[in-house]
Length: 281
Image (cartoon, rainbow, N blue to C red; front, top):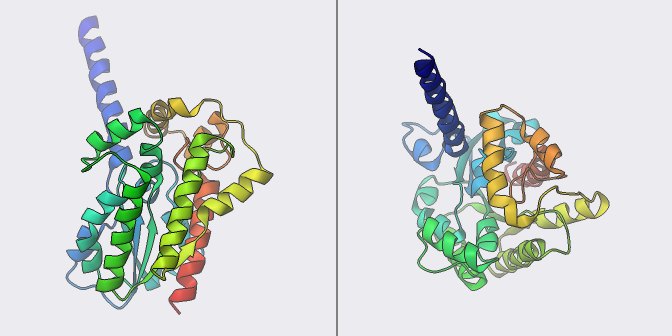
């Protein structure tokens, strides 16, 4: 009987842990595929948020959830085209479904995984394999992928397009990882200028905040992947909030080195909310 009870506990604990990690990858409420299945789409302003896990919104706080605070959501269709782990090249492979939504506004927040994936030889190898890339991630590969993505959107949609600089990687301003995110953000701004699309300075806003409010992370960057997994476990198994996870780890704007807490997510939503308000009147 004792053995049976132990096995039962192990079984249900395993199910709960698996469910926790499923919650971390669960698809958003309205993806491009979901939107395209609708019989009627109405006359609301269609907005596509294109990106990676920061837009997907299951790891860290979802910035899209804050937008109804500043916008009348009855006037908009918010389409979430964010997928965990993706790089600019992966996003480019999904461009047809984004174009098919006939969006009025497209915001693009991509590049964190490009920057992080190119940071070390180990990251380059693992990212290429995990994300089925045609080559190891590098700065030039990011630039060409994002440039083609923007160029194609310009050719095939009438949407207003905003490129957003990526969040800081970590919160210490003089570290290699944060300097990497700064460099990729400069490239994003250059692409926006080249293709005459709008630019939203997220990275710059975060750096300015961290300059005034320095943080003291309790673990180093090289442990970040483990801490991401632990964060998912704490959020969806232990039911801790992302903000309490961030506080426990010593971050001001992040829950780990890559993903955002409420304070960080509200910086994103403020930039995007103001942009939508200016371009949907």
